[in-house]
Image 1 (cartoon, rainbow, N blue to C red):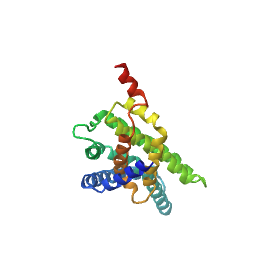
Image 2: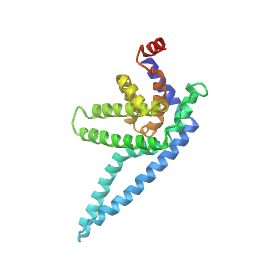
Image 3: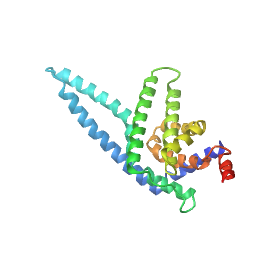
Image 4: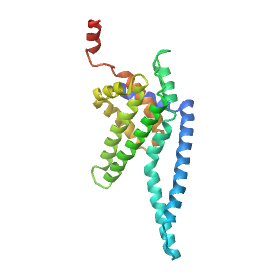
Length: 234
């Protein structure tokens, strides 16, 4: 557990470095541009269905539509930011691995088609998990816990798969994740707390990549004893 705290502190120090700051500016700019375009488009679409003659009623519906869109955008900001930041994660992982591995032993960039698939899957899972977590916010006593636990599983799973897939196939990464599921869930709690902290949540992809790349390096790639048995067979 001490190693996990040290990895979190090292990740926090790294996300304020120039390469990470540059990615933050680009990803936030693209995220808010996409959300603004979505707001304008959805607002025009919604108002095109409103056929009300009375000015005061039309004004009330306009404000109600705006409020609904505000909550929708607040809900979408997490999956959209995850999707956008996915375009830059390989660059960030390269910087992190340069500090952790000897030259020539870094991971490889994930192929574009696979990266797009993983990004879309992550964004979709993020939207679904946070939708149910949002519903649970209305249930006293379990709302905050539900949010933290759901996001701990989500972020622990997906960011670890990203870090691991730079060194092995997706199938091998899935097997490694299942083998260390509890440890990765605990690691995911660090990221979930980050997500739940106002102001810091926009830095989540940066922290998660720096943190999970370090967590991946800590884990043995094979089950205990497997490497020894393989060596004996050879």
